[in-house]
Image (cartoon, rainbow, N blue to C red):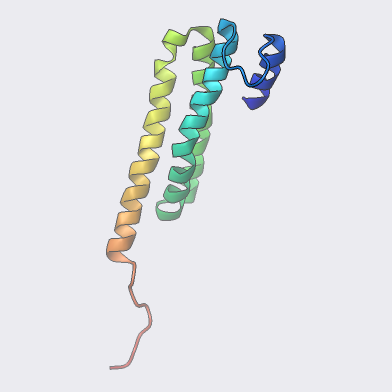
Length: 122
């Protein structure tokens, strides 16, 4: 996406640091910004989920996240008003990762943290 924004700067004559220009430029720029905002939640949530729940499940959800962002881009570029479905899917994925990671973290700390696995003679 960053590459597309960079090439769009040239295509639509929007030199840095400007962030406003023709409608298609602003759509492309907003798609990139929205994705960056989602990544702030997605990356740490997926790492915590992979450690405390399951790494393969986190990888599968990661692929779903990428697909949801591609769908979001397609919807937003066609008609910004139609982007809602793609946005909701991304939010649900992030919410699932956050919730799952928090549950896994809580279970770990309640039941396994500080457990002494050494067998000691009394």
